[in-house]
Length: 141
View (cartoon, rainbow, N blue to C red):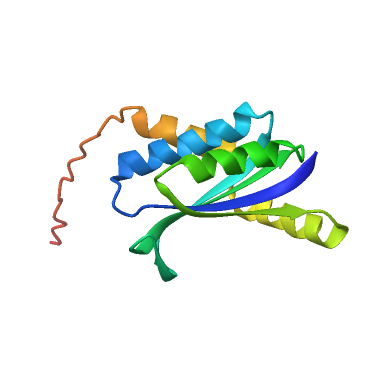
């Protein structure tokens, strides 16, 4: 399996929930093709270098994954079909220097398991503890 990086830009007009749904939809397409997602990074809304489909900003996301070469065509076809994706780029890491850079980026990005744990921890309810501080006065005689 080869190592790949795909960066895609989603329309900035989507709400946060819609953006997360689109990112999840794209990640599902990647995993459905038999690929293994190693890490992801949500870069948020950033300014584009030039106007794309009448948008000056976009919601950037980077996905690092391992896949067979023939699955990339299907992943890119799905990105092309998706109307909310305004731009995408897929890079293959092949030689040892590039693979070292890929592993370095995996260490910097958030692994997929950590993202899932963060989502689950947000759902859990937390108990609040109220503390009262009692002031005492020291009286010297």
